[in-house]
Structure formats: structure tokens, C-alpha cells
Image (cartoon, rainbow, N blue to C red):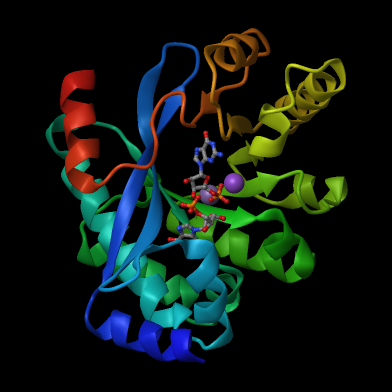
Length: 252
Ligand code: G
Ligand code: G
Ligand code: MN
Ligand code: NA
């Protein structure tokens, strides 16, 4: 309850920032975009991690104003980074409550328009458990998002359960392989699992994104397996705006 009160205050006082983790094309090691990750800078406690406060925000509906702030801030940043002919994608995590909100499509449309950002540069991430929850309803919402022009990813793939039948029906662009699979890739069975997931994404005609890449060996293996994209501490931690900006400058 105390955290809820503090969270309410934090939203008014704008104690949040977005960090950005670069995502790489594994074939040429070029940056294709960033994933926006929220951070709460608490005046006394310091950095409060999102897996502590996002669940509270979801229970109390504070996720609505917070989610809108995240969308708006990430879209504004995407616009800045796409000036001068750059083509970068901004990945934004949507919580289950946001995904089920009746106003979602309006909020997305207004936010894209307000920030003059093409929806083609925005990629919304939804976890497997959120979209599989009410899969028929999810198809409707996902189709509406696609109609706006935004891209879609299934996040944390492999940690929940997926109906392969629905996976095929979802209009998704990417599947993000959970980092628990990537960090067991040096074992035979771990590697077989990643191979199987990549074979599946290839037959679905969607891209695979490896999460939590921490070593060069993992990069090499994923390249050999034709995994399209990747992110992780091997490349970069999530960065504040300035550091991400500096990374982009030196990258080009
Ligand atoms: O950034 P970090 O690894 O601490 O994130 C922990 C969890 O919080 C991850 O599951 C991530 O998806 C989630 N998360 C981070 N930023 C956001 C956000 O902006 N919106 C939502 N809904 N979840 C987020
Ligand atoms: O659930 P989601 O994939 O959105 O979570 C992203 C989270 O994963 C971020 O909080 C980020 O800090 C964390 N993360 C990103 N790269 C790595 C990595 O290489 N190793 C580990 N352990 N965590 C990572
Ligand atoms: Mn994510
Ligand atoms: Na993930």
C-alpha cells in the first residue's frame, strides 16, 4: 500500500526515465533499434526495478497514465533518432492491462500522430502469457494494431505456454526468445531447443530476436543458426538517453 501511494506521487512528480537497450542485426552487427525499458528513480530508494512496480501499477490502474507516458516518451525519442534518414525501430513493452484496455487503439493512434512518428518505426512487445490468455480476443486487438501500421513482437517466448495454432494466427512480426534459452545454448539440449524455435519462426515467416546475449560464443552460434536479431549485455546494457545517443553517434 505504501508503494502504491509512492507510485501515485511518482507519476505526478515524474520520477521515471526510459532506458534504451540496442538491438542488433546479427548478420552485420548493425543497430536496428532499441527496446525502451522504464526506470523509477526514487528520491530516497534510488532505482526501483520495473518488476517491483509494474505489477503494482497494473493492480491499481496506475498503469494507464504510466503506460501513456511510456508510449509518448518512447515515440518522441524514436522521432529524434529517426531524423536525418536513420531507420531505427523503437520497441515498447505493453502490459496486459494496457493490451486489454478498450482505449488502446485510440491511445496508440493519438500518440503516433502527436509525435509525428511513423507506426512502422514502432514495435510493441507483448508477452506470450498476455496474448495466449484470451487468444481469440487477442487476434482482434493484434489485427487492429497491425492496421495502424505498427509492428508486433511476442516477448519472453518459451516462458509461458503457447498454442502453436494461435501463434500461426497472430499477425506478429517477431518472436523474442527468452534469455533462459540463450544462456543454456552451450549445452547440447539447450542448443537443440534454440534450433527448434528458430526452425519454427522460419516456417511462420517471422523474425527471431535472441534476448540476453552475454558472450561472443552465443553471437557466433546464433549467426550460424540464422537468428535475425539480438540484444544483451554482450552488446550493451540498457542505456540512458545520452549514452544511447553517444552509442549511435560512434556506431555511424
Ligand atoms: O529492464 P528490466 O530487465 O529490469 O525489466 C524487467 C521487466 O520489466 C521485464 O519483464 C520488462 O519487460 C518489464 N518492463 C520494463 N520496462 C517496461 C515498460 O516500459 N512497460 C512494461 N509494461 N514493462 C516493462
Ligand atoms: O521481459 P523483457 O525481455 O522485456 O526484459 C528485458 C530485461 O532484460 C531488461 O530489464 C534488461 O535489463 C534485461 N536484460 C537485457 N539484456 C540482458 C542480458 O544480457 N542478461 C540479463 N541477465 N538480463 C538482460
Ligand atoms: Mn521486452
Ligand atoms: Na523478454
